[in-house]
Image (cartoon, rainbow, N blue to C red; front, top):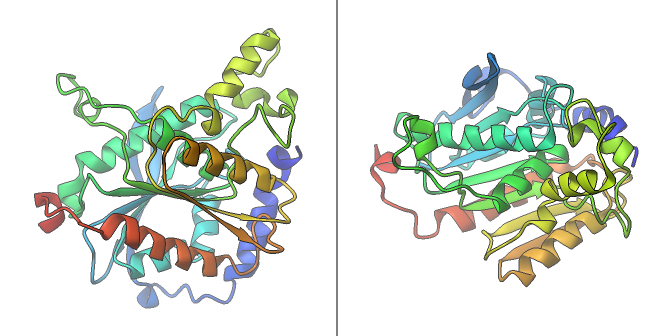
Length: 309
């Protein structure tokens, strides 16, 4: 359970090595990048995202990327995903990518960060015509903590409220497909036993678990365990996980795939032989993920006005 303390450093080192040779000259990149766009506000603090727009051959579709590592979302997480070539590869396929930063565990709980991701999805849908994308065919992705939040959001969609006074609340948080890397998915079954509640602490409650009963801790851990929350036929999922991951057990993805299939969903698991958290050749799997999104988002693509403008 050292994941919660060391994953950000490990991911940063590995992804930097994987992407070091990639030229970052903006003229060679297949996208235009808008930095630190405010997509929401919580307690007077702005929630930020970067938007990566294809320079050519846009396909009218979008991917929401949850940029979070160890449940922290400073700008280094955007850098890590850039070095993993995620934005280069997705935009080369024609996708507009919205890289959401949902806040960090130093200020927000896991549930609050998931709600911030949902706020971002609503924002993307509200501005779909501006970005020339189809709001009904969004993909959702993330890695590690970002993969956890993406998975949690994907299996707990919220319907829009047409009569709400706030435009964002009129829109639902449903997405069409989700593909994630090595996500924590069940804090009640972490390789056969509950995750260490002391390590979860501020991910469960503001200020940590002190003063909370064992039952309250268990209930909150359940509320952020997507493998425990699949209630109806889920959207298609792809999970990619290394079999040598020292931080998040492969069992977490295996458990999630089993749960999704049991609920009647389509779920695929790609196991990277020798893969850690992450691994040096991660861009190869990003390409696989982009092809997978092509299959699940482009098939019978809607001819909505937003997608055609």
